Image 1 (cartoon, rainbow, N blue to C red):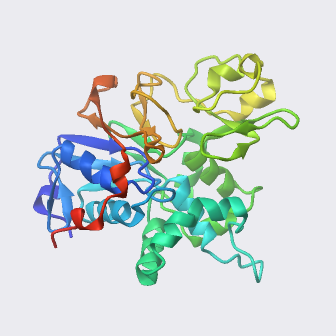
Image 2 (image 1 turned 90 degrees about the horizontal axis):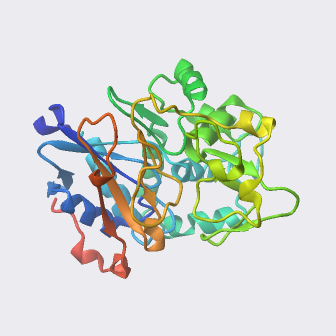
Length: 335
């Protein structure tokens, strides 16, 4: 239920990056920014939170992260967009209607590993997990407020317009999810681009040994370079490209695969890209808030108060430490 406070127009928003099960760090960041818990909900007298998605997977306190965010959203104290990990687990847990024994997202060794921590932490709470999956389905793929935009990975104007034609508020349904499991559909392109961004494929049998333990045949690209000429101009990930591939020219075909977000556009907030180090702005009107929290990096927020040109001094963060593994008793709700 919305509180009287939540109905008032906030004076600012605190946009929080990928939590990935670091629930203790989320609570610490909220409290550091002046949020206080009342009846199980964190709130601020003048501000609201926007979550970038990817609340789940990999980290040790997934339920705490989800419950903290969900209570805030449902009380009107926060907004949220869907991340690729929420989209992935929805497909992982949904039977494929065209295959008697299959799932929308195959239960491969790699997919099993990604979702293992989440499923394990909900193992003794099956009804809560089913209810959480239902909530994930309600999360929009994008937010467009009067003065800024939010998407998990990539703002693509044409695909967002296509999504709006059938889903004006950006909230998909099961029919969309089923179609999005088929790579030759518009639904697949929309879900993939908005929650995973763009990527370019590596030549031949070259692979990247990624910092998250996987081998990758492609690399993540960004979407704000004005006139990119080489792969290095658009790469956006902590892992270096092998050899001299950063100097490889972008082909016309590759260029057509990329999105672009112009400097003249309103501020955009994203997550997803596993940045490292001290938070910085990749472009004057874009802030990436994923700073590898679950890899003992930083859980990062941007404290937006109406500015058209973003300011790196407005980042706030907590360093994720080993005490993320701390006891449950210290992090409970007061309801």
